[in-house]
Length: 512
Ligand SMILES: Cc1cc2nc3c(=O)[nH]c(=O)nc-3n(C[C@H](O)[C@H](O)[C@H](O)COP(=O)(O)OP(=O)(O)OC[C@H]3O[C@@H](n4cnc5c(N)ncnc54)[C@H](O)[C@@H]3O)c2cc1C
Picture (spheres, rainbow, N blue to C red):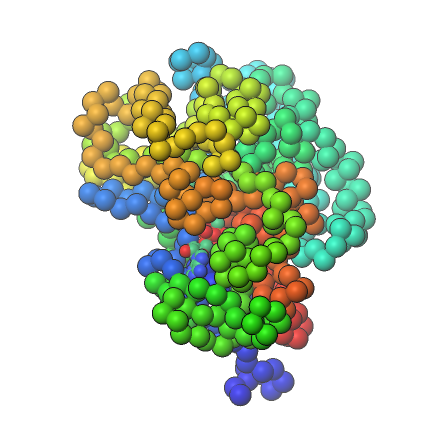
């Protein structure tokens, strides 16, 4: 048997899925010297971070807001490389343009640009909301940084073997308590700002975690920190350049990447029990591995790959996040409104909208939406004078009350009408040259549980030590790296999940 050091045996590791979680796990294991193979069903790496390319337009079809550059740096650093050598990153300034509706007027309550530089942001708030709220932002941004510092190592960037791990060491948990991190997010943000628009701007991010700001705890303000303070980036060529770049370096470092290769089951020593011994592929062939890391959703891994009817209770009983209606459009003309790369349109109903979306499973009456224009930062992504548009409306997952087969067209037309009144789309329907629409049934058809790309929600009892674990003691040698396990959803979290899975693997193989 080959060894990479005098004392260490080279083992074989299969990673099922070349999404960002799987790629991160591979990156963090390369230096171990073990033999790594990534199996990916699709023809491309990146999973949800994919692209729609048609008629001269290239539009990301998954994540669009790239935050937490230091976490991306850790991936390339684990591979002995620098991010800047592999990605041409644009630092966005404006991070977001937030527009506040009044009735049917999308700009009726004004707009505000979230600026990259602290002093610029203070000045922007002063001009839009007055001196008192500008001063409040100075205190609020310090609060967010303190919260992030207390939370990241204790609650996000670590493996949990029991609830007690969350409490030990106790000092960061006490710090979180002192910071009020277990109070409701909306009330924390409201305690800083008197302007309701700022309360919306600094609390809506909990929706990324599938939770209303009225239900979310203050700990979720770390997403606000990532989103509004720590910087937002865009890789030239689109977000999908991130998995492409990681994949290229992995291949250079000897990782075997087998796209268009579906794993149909994870093999175990005693058939349905015992430790993992390998994987079976769609063509029926079997390959031996010492370790398997599943980057497929945990629920899908149990249902489809383990043939095991009893996933852990945490997985079987999970609640899923709302989903998204995504419209990707290549248009001959550019928006005539004043836009930024990312534009949020806040509908004028707020608390009720979350009740409709999350509690009642209905479409929001006055939906808040995200319009990202990748061609704003990289004109090559659209035809000359045209635009690449990414328009996302949060909608209930398939547990909700919408019959997408019958209601899809209506939902699409309403969304387009709102984009016309916001001067994002032209009034001429033929201005749209190419389009792709993805609704919850489409997400489901792509293999996403409950028809949502945002996986298990982050309500408190599905977060940190309460989130489905990245190992299962009943299945030695199997580990999980994806949004459905710790620490959770979103590009930064999923990249961390790969690191945490790699840490488990090294311990399992006796590397540390
Ligand atoms: C529309 C949308 C908007 C988003 N917006 C943002 C955002 O702005 N910012 C942000 O940070 N995050 C965002 N996210 C979330 C983020 O994209 C995801 O949390 C993250 O990409 C999930 O990565 P993953 O590795 O867990 O899973 P995936 O990307 O789903 O990867 C799993 C991979 O496993 C493969 N696979 C599954 N089963 C098998 C099998 N049996 N054999 C072989 N291969 C298999 C799949 O094909 C897939 O490639 C968004 C997601 C979507 C879809």
